[in-house]
Image 1 (tube, rainbow, N blue to C red):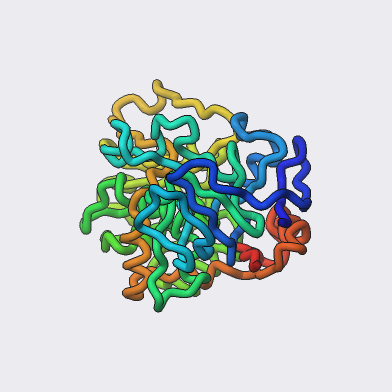
Image 2 (image 1 turned 90 degrees about the vertical axis):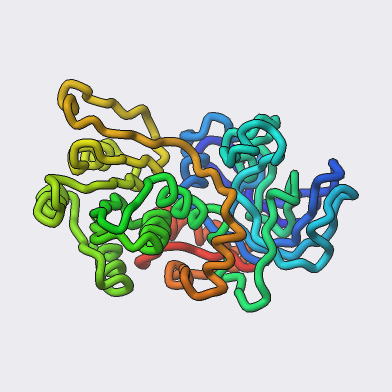
Length: 344
């Protein structure tokens, strides 16, 4: 089968690999119908994910059709349309039982697909712990509608969930890339009083203004001023940082009011510094970590009911054979790209 692999530092390559096989009775083989390129793939390409294995098939955001199941898989059968979860989790350990599935103690627990085990930018993928790692797509939901369920939508849903957003809150979201927009969509489900989005890219600011006109849009230069002006208590009640830079990290804690929640959903290339003397007295609550992507059934239900729609994020489509061109466009932010769907 065709597969896009992490060949070496800085190089992805489209190549032929053997079709995956069932190796555990809890596995399923899924024929990929649609996948996408994620910024996390670029982190792998450029060496920012130390756990990534060279030669691995990349890709962790996908939809498909169940091709084969192991003998222990009862929830799914051949022919089921499914989304694939970004995380592998056993469902039985302490962390899984408490919905901290990113910290599953299995050797392949957490983010494994497309990082430590073969992922979905290919024609087929093996999904371990398939009963946890797959979710059925409702008949009325298209692949395009479901594509982001297992990763960036799950991340946005998780970030909004752990941020404890109240209807009286002003929420600042930093970053309006694909994950930032999904975070915005999921934050809107909480009905906060105000939402402010900070984004440096003019095209993405215009996207927010066009699709979500009730949202206040700022750029990094006027973000702090805008937040203070629009907030009730000298800063945002909740800040969700999705951009992943030193400047955005600084903006996050500076824009928060005292005793606010600052949720870090971003993945950074290097350590961030907490300047505690400068922050003294703000009494901030920081929430950090990888997504606990265990609400995918609820997300698919929200999509089915028309509460979530991310199809506008898909600005480009390419067949798998042209994935190198797709990566060039995505990595260099060409042609006003937001997300690219790879169609098999």
